[in-house]
Length: 395
Length: 50
Image 1 (cartoon, rainbow over the protein chains, first blue to last red):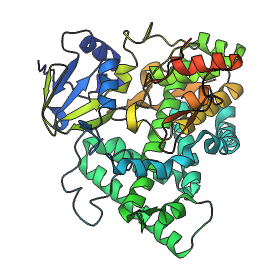
Image 2: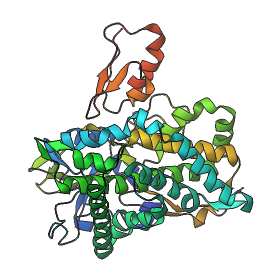
Image 3: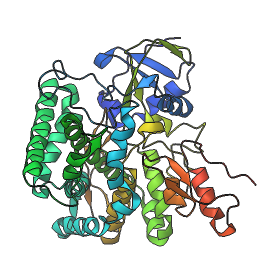
């Protein structure tokens, strides 16, 4: 049965609080709904369905992964083939696309950034702690992942604000404004073309971009499109997502004195608490493109249809999680899919988990008590990545 | 996730799929960690057999 509800993923109320809508659909007779808005898409809401979709990568392909179709003309021109491998890749290329970037995200490699991360968080807090108030999203959360990613990519950390602007242009503002999206995509590509040319002239040691340029595939250097695309992915996927998770977690803590107290008194709660914030406030919704006509859970999906990978809805499914709408800091069994599942599960999850832990712990050590200045003044972004964008707190 | 919850038991291959580092019988001191990995795997890929 095809159930059209014409949901709008950019609707203000949905972005501010999508969970009532997810629940209503999930508990209805048609837990997968369809909308014609924004190029048309299917939205599954049950955990089992979303995991199954993620695991069936031969039917639900990653040839496009944005929740709205690309702007007209994006696939044309000299950089039309630049995507974001491996997240936009299907097998067999997916495997070498993923293999090439994975080592920089191993737990051991991620851990080498921990000290610098903690220092940077402290520098940010030094900047506002005496004022007694700060924007936990814009002055703190937003600034941390971009600083880490710039170090990993070996690009100037002084450009962090510019990178953030580009990424928001592609992933946030640009999703409802094709011109902004196209413009910022080109800025990112042109920036990395410049970085690549610079590395070709002056190769560096222990440098990701140099290593990607040295990568050989079947005896040939990896295509330039791949190298630009992989850099593009790290910038785009590594910034907005983790920043949104940090922001949502701080927003939650600002409104829950009991949870602040628990984390202060029982620091051994941190590992499960981080997973629980990821579950409850999973920032990312991806998309898949249906490869061939298929009936999935009674829904007649056509080749080329877009299916939203509604991980935030999966993570609140009562069939999978006891008390799904409650944040339970010591939740023991937590098979959340904030990082997805299947072959495309997040390559940077070790780094993201570390960033989230360090950012939240450092904040709680320095600012153990804080509250929202005005809960109604908090603003959210959503669509592809959901998280607070303005979140003023006082302490 | 499993490689973080129980690094003595699970590793990962070159494309990030889990591998098992301890063959056969699970040492008793690692059971709690392995159980945590089992209960937190979104792929349902881990089953500890008594």
